[in-house]
Image: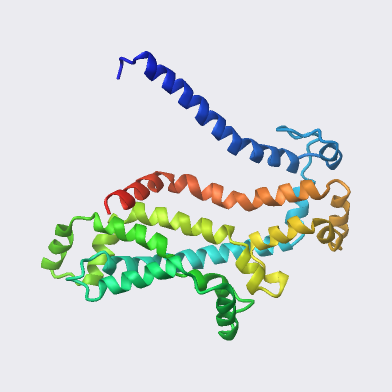
Length: 296
């Protein structure tokens, strides 16, 4: 609209100011964390670091990459995300597709739906889950981090609502051409599901990547910690972990950094993978979320 009233102009200005303030409150702490990670330990201890590094140094990042434990935990988290998200997507598609049909086409559809909703609202509890994982011999394995949340019900419901928005005529045409239900799902439905899969896939990636509690419970050996569990332990006793690094190169780096710079560097490194993934999925993210929630 080329014509705007005075009220519209005031609203736009106020809206821009509010959104700018909210954006800054999200971005500035992260910028400060980045500046601390690149600053000298003395400047950080003196409180001189704001949003620009003071006495620029890479010591904290060299410590993180040479220590060994960070890279090991990073690889465990990447393995968890790769296997876990793949399993999540497969199970969500295989569950959401039949549940998107009416009870006339899928016998007992409502019973299954109630069952899944109950599991979403009421969990089995921490102690029973721990006992099951222990009895199955999954402790200290990557599967202890993946299998308990193999089917995210909330994300499955989003995917189910998206499938409901697909015209039934598409599936009927595939059936007339002789396609089986599985062929219809793979060759017809999945190509249409790209926005929704990107949306729930991003949810799953963030969920696996940010989960630290599972690693703390199910991993007895700190060598098997995923990245977020390692970072959590790092935040609690970084000084002790610094003292356990025995390499001469590492000891030389410790004189140029302190606990704050070390924590900042490793926290920033831990956030990089998700920051790299999000821009590629952003165009699908909004479209998939809106269609999956509104059309259902």
